[in-house]
Amino acid sequence: MDTGELKKYIKGDRIIWAVLVALTCLSLLVVYSSTGALAYRQQGGNTSHYFLRQLMFQCAGYGAILIMLNYIPVRLYNRIANGAYFMAILIVIAGLLFGRGGEGTGRTLNFGIASFQPAEFAKVAIILWVARLLANSQKDPRLLSISAFKIIIGIAVICALISLANFSSAVLLFGTTLIMMFVGRVQWKFLAMVLAAGLALVVLIYFVAPLLPNIGRLQTVRNRIDRHIHGGEKLSEKGLTQDDFAMIAIHRGGITGVGAGKSKISNFMPAAYNDFIYSIIVEEYGLVGGIVIPLLYLIFLTRGGIIIRKCTRTFPTFLATGAVTVIILQAVINMAVSSGAIPVTGQPLPWISWGGTSQIFTAFTFGLLLSVSSETDEEIQAEVENNFNPDGVLPDEDLLLTKN
Image 1 (cartoon, rainbow, N blue to C red):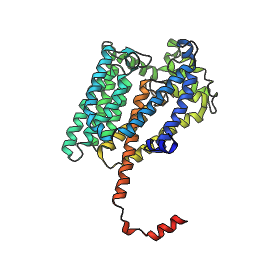
Image 2: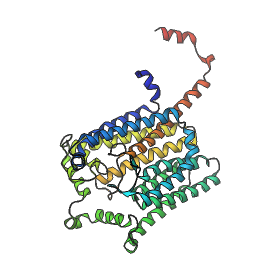
Image 3: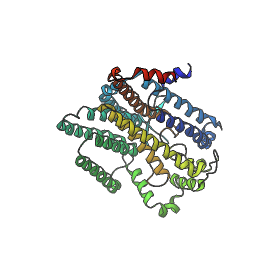
Image 4: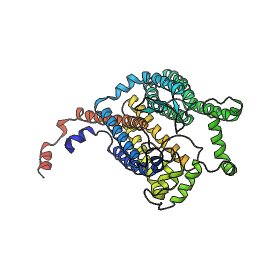
């Protein structure tokens, strides 16, 4: 397949493609350097094992994106949205009942050759479902209000289930849904009430957690908030934790960094290649690396906003909004945790952190946005061609320009 033929399959916003490739390069570099200690513990010193595994899953992710762009129309996601939502609930429940605890914060379903956290599937399913409900109720304000209540009830159910194993993913989905509803013209007063109720519930859980049985991760969430607030006071009692090591890594990085592959802190952090990978990037590449990463996500956000503004139909608009929001919020959470701005959570840095099937679900999210971009460009091009009036063209001038 030559380069010209390959370009036919690489559709959508080219700048987002460039961001995706840049994130891939950074991911492979930092995963290789941050999994050294893990390789010696579990792979007999084979340091290339996790690098090749990451490369394999990212190549699979690119394959999934290309299939979505070339063979799956955006309207199909509208049709399967309800089924995806109920499937997400079943998978989350299965994870709670039959899943095993992993190094991260969630329950993991193991299928032998592959495993994944149900929350990763739920992220994609919720985007489809919320986009469908919002898109189908834009013509009637009363219907939009009914859809808004349906969305809140549905999100409350699935977030309650997810929070038992992965509290941060529940918060991420809740925030993504509110932003999608805001873009979907749901009344801001209603959204403010929902946000206030959500915050009040979190505060209530925090204070009553000691009185409740040890269900899910309630005590873990409370302890992490306490650790974030009173970290300095409890340091001598509990020793250094991963967030402490993250601060040390950022301090060691300074302006210029210690150099690629020269991280020492990653040897002491179980999640250096995942939840705290941003701190390892800063350690190795310094301030430059610390700026480049958020800059790439900012470019992604900007291009995503342009795609959303170009959309001419409701469902693609909300689909793109959800895809952009979940990627950006997840990136912000990961970088905020690594820099000590918020309590520790279990969110990987999208498309950079080491992972397996989570990479595939992240690829699905990128694929949704690129699919919307591709189909929107085709619709705009078709409209231009249909409205083209040959009587208004000066053929002599065209010939003259062609000859020159």
